[in-house]
Image 1 (cartoon, rainbow, N blue to C red):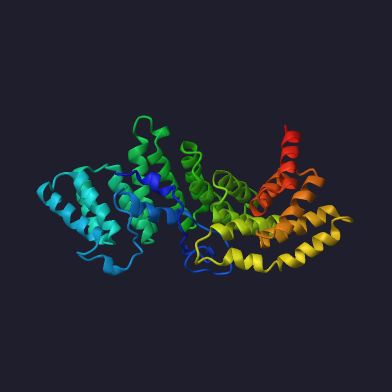
Image 2: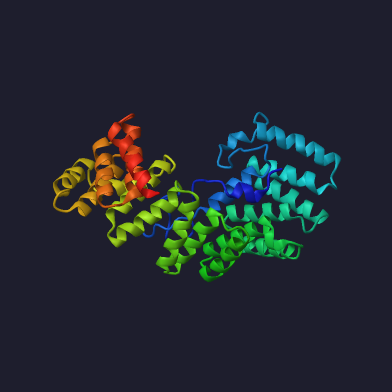
Length: 362
């Protein structure tokens, strides 16, 4: 059986909160606030992944819950095992997790509660019940579940290194965000990160809490940590793009939006929409060419926007490389030349520049 905390670290689509401020990365989007929450989405992944051998989406068609589906057959087989061993908590939990994968949440709760009667402090059963409450938006119930689990795990020896405890604080912090108790969310997410510092979802949720508190600088700091751990994380890149756009750094915003657009689910159009608002690559490249002699810094910005709008435009990428090297922006120049080589394999100008810049960087 796979630990729920491992499953919760996986990337997933986002879902909207009950807040007026919804993410464009959820199945519904409102324009008021672009704050994004990945945590509850990770919860949903955890719900379907805890069994390890079952990875059926709980968003699947209800028709999957028939005797013809593998998940339904698994439920039937595991129910037979539980019938023979009704007093084995682990068997009931495994059945419950199969039921979760088959979208039988009410039945799963019955099994998990039965398991807790046998083992009242079973951390796996408590976690699964908490995750179901979160999925259903039963936030007060979830809060009580996570508080109980934290008490159970926190009393154990070596709890300060227990990843399950980190996850419980993370889920509680997420629940507090949903309840608009942002200070409490921050406190618990920090406790989670004190145990598991490299948790990208926890850093993202902390960024969300800071954003709701109006702490823009701290939000940005957490988002930068997220992309340091996961450079292609679409949601964090999108948020950083909005922040850069607000500060007037259009080139940086364009690059963040490009990363978000390239890595967002196909149904999410917000990053592409933001890119479209910036104009065309052709126009920005023409501006860059016009400014490269008189204002190379502005030309570089325009070339970066052009390359973000059209990553396959070799002329734009090459101009970014040339201007970045001229501006002594060595790493950006190297990155651009490497990208140019992808577009124009074997180009000697690019290979020579990479060697030269690499040697100068040492």
